Length: 103
Image 1: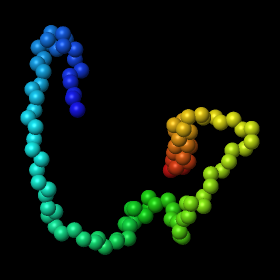
Image 2: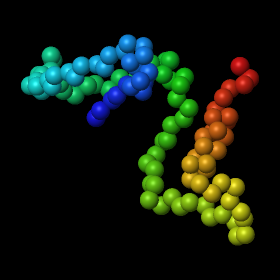
Image 3: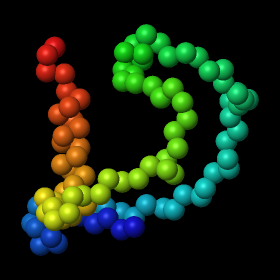
Image 4: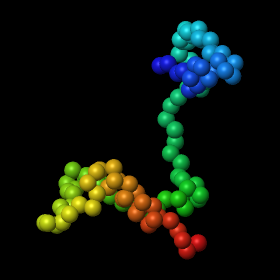
């Protein structure tokens, strides 16, 4: 990767800016061993503050393989033709639904 100055050469000369010198390559270091042995971490229940952030829980297993996408009605025109526009509109709607305006 090469990163140059954004100043054109004639402007850099006018202001007395000198180009940066090339840095010397650095040899890679050996892998560092962890300070403490790693192992299983006991699962802790979420704190009260975290509990307030959780919007909902799924009580059973979810089978995504059987989920199907809803078909659009026959003869309906798509409002957004690009996938990026559809995603942007969906996020805006979801954000509007998630904002608490009642305080």
